Every structure is written in structure tokens, then in C-alpha cells.
Amino acid sequence: MMLAFDEINAKGGVCGRKLRLDFEHASSPAESVAAVKKLVEQDKVFILVLASGSTGAAAAADYVRQVGVPTYNLYGSTPIIREPFAKNVFHGAVVPVQVSAAALISMFYDGEYTPKKFGILAGTYAFPQATLKAAQDILGQKGATFTVEQFDIGARDFTSQLVSLQRQSVDSVLVLGSFSEAGFAIKQAREMGMANVRWVVDGSAVSTAIIPILGNADGIRGYYNAPAFPGQTPATREFEARLKKQLGSMPQGRPSVYDLIGYGSGYVVAEAIGATNCQLTRDNLINAWSNLKDAGPTRLDGLDITFPESYSPTDHQGVYRIGAAIVKDGQWQVYRVIDKP
Amino acid sequence: MLTELGFVVLAGIKFGALYALAALGLVVVHKATKTVNFAHGAFAMLGAFASFLIVVNWHWPYWAAYLLIPWAIGLIAAAMESVILRPLRQADMFTVVIATVFLGIAISEGFRLTYNTELLAVPSLFAGPPFIVAGVLITRDTLWVIAGALAAALACIALFSYGRFGRGMRAMAANIRGAQLCGYSIDRVYMLAWFLGGGLAGLTGVLIAPVTGVSIDLSIAIITAGFVAGVIGGFDSPKGAIVGGLLLGIAESVSAAYVSSAMKNCVSFLLLFLVLMWRPQGMFPERSGRSV
Image: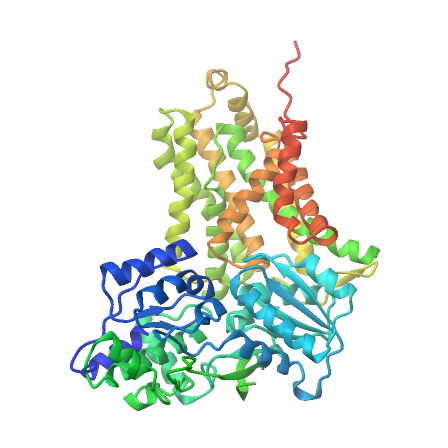
């Protein structure tokens, strides 16, 4: 997002003003609430960006609804920040869990594969649990046979869960957790002889960082909240170069989808501000944002690396599209785009 | 059924061997200096991070990580003992222990600030096909981790039991004044103990890096498991540390597989309470009696 703001500011900013990003770090629900309160009450920010995951977004949900500050939820897929509807809260590239869960399940059927029995490995924390519920509903509606095993956040030993999946002869496993959890789970499964299993991982695990954990990650699928993976198109390659220049060096696993979304979201914020006709009140911003169509970097000469975002006064979910990704020859790539599955 | 149990026990032994090595590092420092080194997990994390740098960033061969890192972390630990903890020895033991806690936090936060990422992955040492024993697949990496950790632990015990260095540490543990009168230097023995403890932490880090990756959580995971394994075995007993580590690893794995995966985390504390209630001195306490 900082990269996007730097680019926009270099071109003169929006409404004659430069965009400034104030940042508060938070790594727990309590810290998230404290950070949000500080940004709103002390720093008096014009727009609040929730750039944490579901846990932070869920913790801040009641507060942002109460104070009415324009809020942009970048990464939280949890229903807690989405329901009930709030006119000041907008959701960007990360889709609701019902959409991502449907996309995940659909990937098990790609390439004429017919799953016989599903296993779900889910983290016990907020966002995997939300997706788990949605996935269970979908599998239930399909009449599919499935079994669920859970693990704690940061788990590295999955022997017990995998033994159970092996005992039940599952041939298709959905992993709901981070790339590190998914990576070590799949690595251990292979060490236990679980070959010929189709692995589909949650979007948070669709990262280049999962590949060095596994060595050979070919065939693993998952959803991606952008139309192309870094390196897959000229625009994403250019983004990678610009980000590397800004960061100095590129850490393992980056650019991640969060980098891409952050960049695209920076441009959406600028476009929403511009749509107020420079009458910069919070009410004007909320109204203008609620009517944005196909917002994103391309209109302001940014790089076309995210799905465009469209809003309406009654629907503040900007994106319903999702990329289906697969590892081929050691590289993630989006192989098809799913429109609101 | 037996194959399944084999997988579960093997996974337990693999993690248990790493816990044992971590516990041994704690025991070595405690035995010689009567200090519980709460920075031990951070030293191991530093070792894992160093192996990431060597193997992934610099593309050096793996053996360089095994050769260099234990020495490097040992030297860092010895330097920290000399510079930070030695002056604190004038105060009470509690001050030194608290200092190790904050030393560990400082190292972990330093890592977070310099490499702010969720996880750094380190590739496995071996890529060949696994061995199959009675239906149980045993990867070369698993064998290497188990054999490497246990061999290092046994070598350390031999050094401790038979070498001059080990005699010095045991003498210090038994009676500091008496050891000094016998010609042992407190500063030298303490520094050597920290060097050895740091070296073991470094080796733990190199061995564990491909198994769990490198993250800031590694520091807490290692110190917790090492501490519990040390207490189970008897905090002054190197042999106890090995048995405690293996017992903890197998108990975690078996309980998670056959009771509930939620048991994995609480079984270590359950074991700790049971041992403390049954044998507060640990399962293999060092003899404190004297023959006259």
C-alpha cells in the first residue's frame, strides 16, 4: 500500500493532497482494538485500513461500526466484520468465506479428478474455522463423505491428524491454515506414504514460501485473490521489481498476495477519495465509495495486478472473483479465474 | 495398526531427540553454573536462522552449517556470559536468571526486526527415497535428525563424564569453593559451560530448521520443550535430559494420535506435574551422597 501511495503522491496525490499512511502494529485481538482506537481517536485518521487478518478484523468490528469511520477491510474473511452490514465498512479483494470455500471445493474436481473421500485439516483459529464451516456446508449439500481434523496455530507436527486421515483412506485433503502449517502437513503426509492425494490449500497458504518447505510442490492447488501470480505476467514482474527497489531486498515468500492486494487497495482508496469531487467529508467518502465501479490501479496508471473492485450502496464486497492456482514446475500460476462460484 | 503406531512413535522419537538435545544444553549450563538459561531457545533459533543464511541465502553446502554454526553460537553464548552475565554474578542467582530471560527476548526481537517474516523454510538435507521397515516409511532426514541429535547428546555426556572439562563442571556443581581450591577457575568453567550449552543450542537449531522452519516462535517452542524434558529427567542429569526428551516426544505424539490432537500441547505440562508430584528431583537425579 505504501508503494501505491508513493506512486500516487509522485503524480501529485489526490485532490491536491498527498496520501499519508499511519501504521500501528497489532498481533493479538486486544492489540488490534487498541491500535484501531489510537488511529481513530488520537491520530484522527480519515480512513481506517484493517490490514490484519480475520482475527484483528473480528476484534475491531464492533468498534468501527460504532464510530462510523470509513473502514477498508483488506484481508479479513471472517463473517464477523461483514455481518451485519455496515455502511462505513468496505471489503476489498479478500472474498467472503462462502465464495472462497466454494472455489476450494471446485478445485478438487478440476482435470477430470473425482474425489472419493475428503479430509479437512483445519486450524483452530478464526479464519480457518470460518472457512471450515462454509466448506462443511458445501460438502454436506453435495452429499460428499468427509472427515475433519484440527490443529493449533503454528503447528509443525501433524502426525496424529495424518494418521487419522490415512486410517480413513481419504484421497482429497483440504488444508485450512497458513502456508507454513500447510507446507509441513503435506511434507509429513508424503513422509508417511500418503501419495496420490489431491491437496488443495487455503488462499493464505498459496505462497511461494510453501515451495521450499516441500521441495517439490507440483500439483498442489489453492485459490489466489489476484488474477495472476508474481512472475506470471509483465505487470506482476514489474510490481516485483518496484517492490524490491522499495524494500531493498525481497524476503522469502514475497511478493505475497498481501503485497498485491495492498498495492491495488491503495489505488482503490485514492479513487474513492477522488470520487468525492474533493468534498472531503466522511459521509461524502462513504457515498462515493459505495458507488465505485471497477476501481483499481489501472485507471490511475498503476499496475494491473488485482481484480477491479465494484461496490453498491447495499453490497460493500468489492470483489467476488478468485483465481484458481496450481504449482507447476515449481512455480505457482493462476490457471483459471472463478467468477462468484 | 502396528504400522500406524510405528509412524506415531517414530514421529515422537524424532521430536523427542530434538527436545533431548535442547534439554541437554540447558542441563549443561545449569549443572556447572546453577543457572537456568532461558535464552537457550533464542540461541537455538539463532542457529536455525544461521542455517537458513548458509544453506538458502549463501548456497553453501549443508555440512558448512553443521561445522560452523555450533561453534559460532557457542562463541556467542560464551561471549554473552563473559560480558553480560559475569558482572551480574555479584548479585543473587535470581538476577542472573532474569537476565537470561531478557537476553532471550532481545535476541528474538532482534531477529524479528531484521527479518520480519512469518517463516523461513530450510530444505531437507537428503532427497533420496525413504527406507521401509515393517511397513513404516523412515525418511533419511528423520534418521539423520534422530541419529545426529542422540549421537551429539551421547558425545556430550562422554565429555561431561570423562574429560577434564566435565570434571571441572561437576566439581563446580558439587562445591564451588572446593573446586576453586583444587585449581579450577570459575570464570573459565562458566564460560566453557556456556560455550558448550550454546554449541548444543546451535546444533539443535541446525537440526530442527528443516523440520519446523525458522520463526520467532521457535525460540519459545524449544525452551518450553527443553525445560520440561530437563525437569522430567532431572535438571542436573545429562542422561535424564535424553530420556526426558524422548519420553516427552513420544508422549506428545501418542496422546495426540490416540486421545486427541488437542492433547499434544497439554501432555507436556501433565507430564511435568506428574513427575514433580511423584519425583520432584526428576527421574534420573544426580547422586548427592558421598562415599567415605
